[in-house]
Image (cartoon, rainbow, N blue to C red):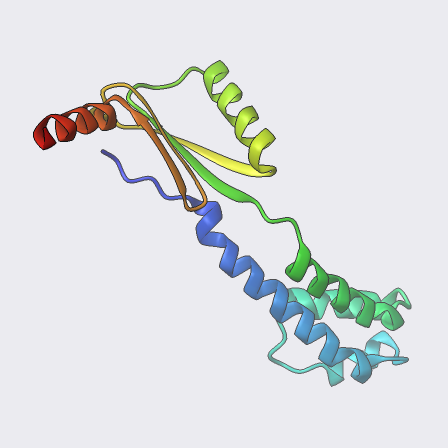
Length: 157
């Protein structure tokens, strides 16, 4: 079975770290550049700023919006604390699901869990049925799991 990487799940900590760093850098730079003309603001900014933050700060100063920098930093922090969280889900089937089947499953998962990012995988060893993982919940409705349960029941009796 091929290994599938969920890039969104891997990228989430990086995105959060970048947003957090940007908020901190904006908050720290705001008092340094308040009221300065754009030509002077560049000289007082720390050299270790993220390039995107530096460009953003200079643009805000140039547009006369340096007074809004603390509000921007707060908005970033609020987004980090309460922002939209996407739940990762994976659906594994014995055969490739049609786009209609995938849409129905995705729709049902979104109805139950809200904003869900669903990845689909094929594992022929399941024989039939599905394994659905949402967060830390697993629903194993595969034929392989059902046969294993029957086998365990027969061995126990």
